[in-house]
Picture 1 (cartoon, rainbow, N blue to C red):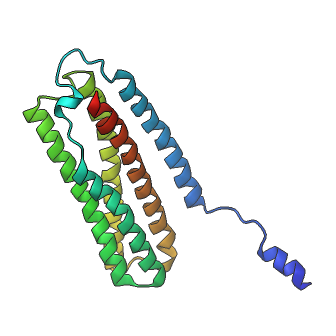
Picture 2 (picture 1 turned 180 degrees about the horizontal axis):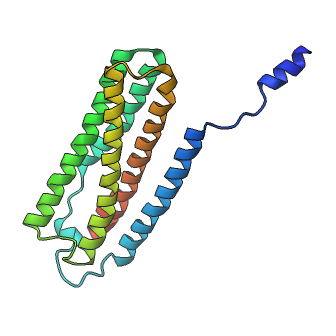
Length: 198
């Protein structure tokens, strides 16, 4: 068998990873779902007949955004450490990522507490309340799922159950987390920048 044939066989196209294909499909599906909620929010924006209105109660989520966008950087650092075999570095950066995700959830809880008990904004208050909690709540539920996945990976790694063959699982959780962060950028634009000035 010629060396040219062997070289061609080695560079032959291979099927993509089933996990990557599955996650890409999940992300596409979830993107379509978020698009529906974003369009609904924009469609009903400014159509509430009774207060409170967005500009009266919404404050720009500086802390929440810092935590979530910053966690995209820390998860990249965690992955780099994992690929280098620096387990301690992976644990540190992965734990920081999970902590930042949990911090975002706590931030959202405080924000909702203020909106509900101080500003009187609930799901049934007006159209703004209905669309706001639907969109932001949908995103928060995805952050919660991401936090659970991050925590599971961390526990498996700390207990020595995370092996080299599981590295693609870690990468898929990272992809999902970046997706959640990307959606937050859209939510910030639509809810807090466009909606907050309405």
